[in-house]
Image 1 (cartoon, helix red, strand yellow):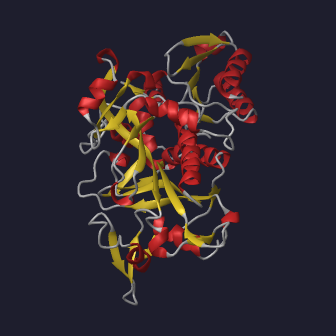
Image 2 (cartoon, one colour):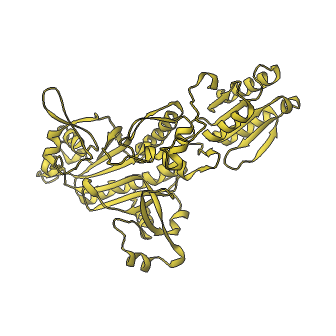
Image 3 (spheres, one colour):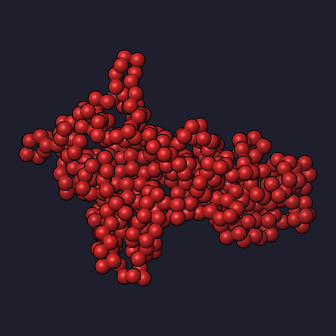
Length: 443
């Protein structure tokens, strides 16, 4: 993509309303624009990252056996009255009325709707286990939206829902999602620690929040430091096998949010030198809640004995849009964002320091074309901005690599190649620069 044809509204000054790093950098880097309190437009650079996060989530859900569908944002209040949650949910739910005076709502979550879909289509235990998920916009009317996408009112979320015959099978489904989450976050360059958590309005008695440690986290967390060095299940993990040993390993050390922490238990279970008391950002949560929704809503299947029984359910959320903020909070420096390659909006920024010069144009255009042909996503700065502004913008948007082509270096046949994370720079020939980038950015 040529920068001269791209929409990238970089801000020189930090907006006053931005309180935390991710919010400041997302606004300055032209990733989002606030439309009203807690509601944002996603500009091209931000949307590219959002789609890459979605893709990783989709790939790991598919590996774990979940099947994707898409449910609407607007839901009927009648479904929520069936489950008993319509009045209990609170003011976070945006309640609306259509032109026929029917009570509707902008969905904050989808347990009721997915249960309705299930009960209309599935009758036998032979059709289980089943896990259905979608990635859809949600709305929760936060009393004080703040921190940009970290605590907005409208947000993009992956929510999956498992259906099983009994508790034993439901826990197996829970374990599959648990392991899928560990892999999902690691692929985005994050270490997300599963912590005991309150189930809140979702319900149930088994839940884990997946927390990324960050100074700007919204809640206090307490855990064992060994979590930071644990090995994530690799490509060879078999989701059809017994995953309980992996889950047991990841839940054997103490980890809890402030809502459920038992300080005496924490101090007894974790040696003093291993204790972490910090702030954390929630990027996902898993729930097993049994028959909380299936029983009142009549979601039953015929079991092996011929009797109808309510199915056991779980739900599993990933904050897709919130993850952008979490990644930035975990990966930035004073100059801007530092994207992991897996979610970066572009892999490489090619900077032409003298557009219109035959030497720099020819070398930069040639490298740009070769990288694109190799499947490497390039943002090519072919604009006539001054060099300092070009460098500052590239550091701000945080692409994994920068390649600078200027008259001095190219006179000797050399590009400057910069690794954004380490800051290391090398002077390389066009061929060597291409080979280095291809080796680093392709599998």
